Length: 130
Image (cartoon, rainbow, N blue to C red):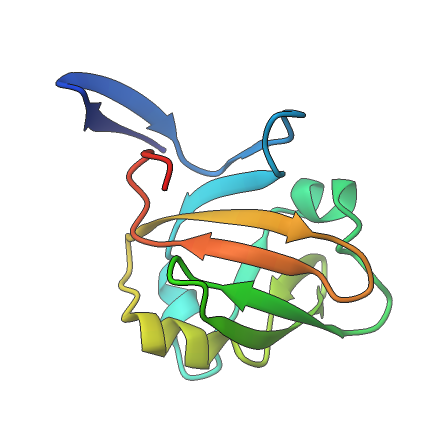
């Protein structure tokens, strides 16, 4: 999905659902909130290529820390869901606290990988860096 944002009076395209692994930035992807992210048994899928290339695919579930733009932290469980990798337990509390809505653009940025990964979740995300 392609959206445009205005930065300094100029429209700039943002491609949603893409990933970045530039050495100048932390690995991240930009996407939109889907309806299944907001249900009672809500979860957030991570792009499989992103999860694989950043060591987030594991046989067993593990804890991850999700931070918002105000540096508040939520523990979530990262795990496999069939052929997907996603945020499981804890995601519903996060999305409810943030008031996320279907169609909201977000940026998921991996700050630290390893045994207990840390990610920052920017929403709403307009393409502007915080």
